[in-house]
Length: 422
Image (tube, rainbow, N blue to C red; front, side):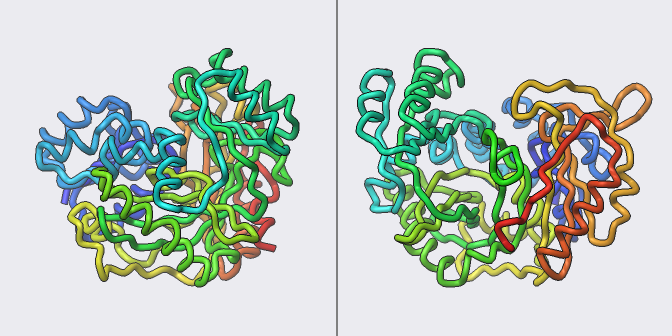
């Protein structure tokens, strides 16, 4: 098979890493990729959102399977365009990708199909939004409706903060078009967890559990980010919780999307809150989480490619995947200033030395090379330093040993990834 992975982050590096190991794959490309992916796989200089160029490349090179990593090309309809010319695309249609593309749509779907989630309301004007806020007890969650690169969610500790978030989004344009409509919802207390399932339009196959860390600072402090680290398995996601999530959240969503003429195929990522009343849905993403994908891929024992093809072909019923018993943890190294403004171009050294730690794998995200061939930081989240071991505690120890071997003064990371597991 010839396979193209679309994207250039840590998630896509992990996908390339595991797909490269499949005996079914004769040729693998990544578009646009990054400096780490380029060490292992041929990278193509096509942006992830240049859907026409991606379709043309796939057609000209007779690609058999396109694995779409980020959400933006899915919302732009890349999967639809590929399927129109007979190329398998792992990822939902543009109509189905609205589950992530519009938080309001997702909340309305939950209301229509009795899927447990936080109470909410949708607004396009500030005054009605503030009136709704005035009736709520803090904390209050204010979300941009559209795609905001993981940064469009504000948890407000006071009514004044919530009103300021409303103004920032609806009148200040803080998130551009993504914030032209907002969702305001109650704050749910509990434990967060990430839940993934492969979906073929009708059937769903749960994957191993994982848990990420969204806040930028130790102790879950500071602003939300795209994710500062993750581990798998997540002890809080028991077999009972898994069954409850499948029965009350995942399967009703799959059935609801099909009934509404938007059948979902791809990977469905449910951000959960495990509350005293049971699991509730925080949000859906229509792709593998980043950095959760990194820990899932290093724990996967089965060949991923047949599962991706089965999801595309509607053949997931009775399909199964096997996982290594060992735990995995990834620590994200980011550029100083992230998730705010940051400088690009700083040189990263010591990567080869870090990879020598037993069980360690270094996945690249925002990396490039300079004129001297040195690895440089080109993004906010730059590296996913991943390690596998018998226990989460041992995986944590190995991951931070690898981090400490990386010579990058302009970078930083959280030092407490995995604390919830302990």
